[in-house]
Image (spheres, rainbow, N blue to C red):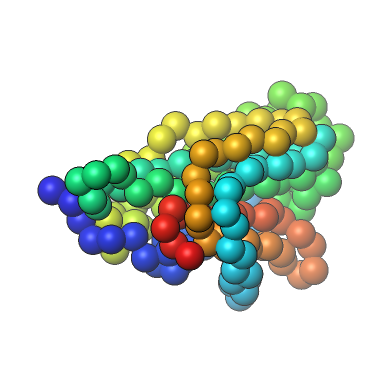
Length: 175
């Protein structure tokens, strides 16, 4: 049975809450304020990142309509230079850590955020939202996610003027 129709602002709030909870748990970082939403309308979603950036794409589907599921997702970008801002105090990682160490910790960080997001979305009434397995990359990428006519929101998380991570949230038909 389909749940309520996706509200992109609620999805953004759930994703921000997930980041906040994960920063507290894994990086011992308390956010004093949340980032401002930056809205972009795009016809076609392409995820791009540069070398030395860990990117995690967590797509979701919702069976709100009978014709086809509504698709969307969350993309996390963590640059090698920001890894120290996130994990130096708790996990001892910095920008000189090996690629394998960075991939492992960033992958776990994004998995925890994904679980927090799912729990919050469920609490808001999105019982039928299904998260797909995260796709993780640590290199330059240029991926077409085959999602069209969307609204994308970008968040840049920082603490004490130190960049932490960037998050994009998007959903089909949310323009």
